[in-house]
Length: 168
Image 1 (cartoon, one colour):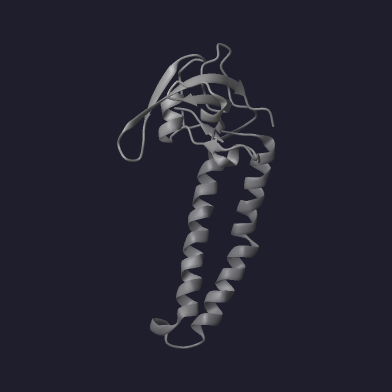
Image 2 (image 1 turned 120 degrees about the vertical axis):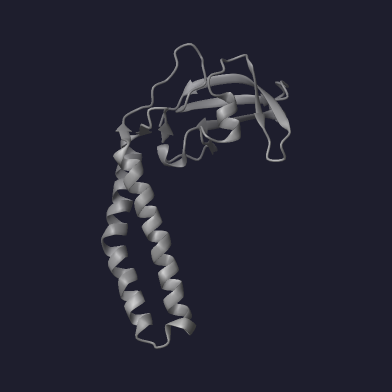
C-alpha cells in the first residue's frame, strides 16, 4: 500500500483481495465468535472481577479497531500498480537502495520497499512513506543525498543508489 497526497491508497490486486477477505472474516465469523465469548464470560458472574470478560472485551476492541482501519483503507483503495517515476525519483511503490553516510560500500547499504506492509506480500523490508526514512528519501533522485531524522533527534544522511518500481 502506498498513499499519495490525495489520500488514495494503492494496492496490488493480491493485497486488496487479502484485506477484503480479512475484513469479511472480522465482520462475520470473528465478530460472532467474540460476542459468544463475551456472553459466556458475562454468565460467569461479577463482571468487575471477571478476567475472561475483560480479556474478551479488550479483544473485541482491538478487532473493531482493525475493522475501522480496513474499512478506511479499502474505501480509499486504488487497485493496480502505484504510479512510478520515469526519471529515477524516489516515490511510493518503489524498491530503493541507499548507502548510509554516502558510503557505497555494500556493508553500509540497505534495500527496502517504500510502501506500507499491505501493499504486497513480500519478504523485502518495508518502510512507510510517512516514516522518517521514507519521508526523507521521497522526491530525491538516484545519486542524490537525502537527510532524515533519527528517533534521538539527530540527523542521518543517505545516498540514493537505486530506485526501481516494485515487481510483485
